Length: 125
Image (cartoon, rainbow, N blue to C red; front, side, top):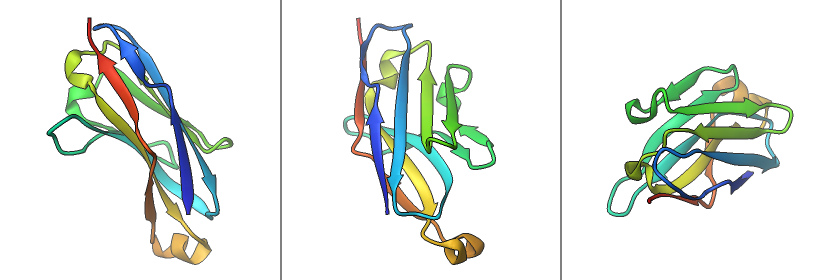
């Protein structure tokens, strides 16, 4: 099982920047993918960005060109650099990690998704 520790949320003015971090720890064989989702009040949770172990990235159309996801494989940490923030980016941001418990799960591509506790991002003047 993977434990995820998020940090970096807060209050920022429109046009500002924030950097979120998420460190994975616990008992697992490998992490296939890590990412960030967000959930605004009254809305469904949506994918913001994801990055695979090989470095392939995927972004929601609404954040392309503004947000950048990156990772440190040694530290098992994923980052989300958010620039040009807009009020509509206000949400609770959740980190996720898709991990394999052992090498057999890895070979079978049987991954378990774990979630962080969430960090609030508020964009307001």
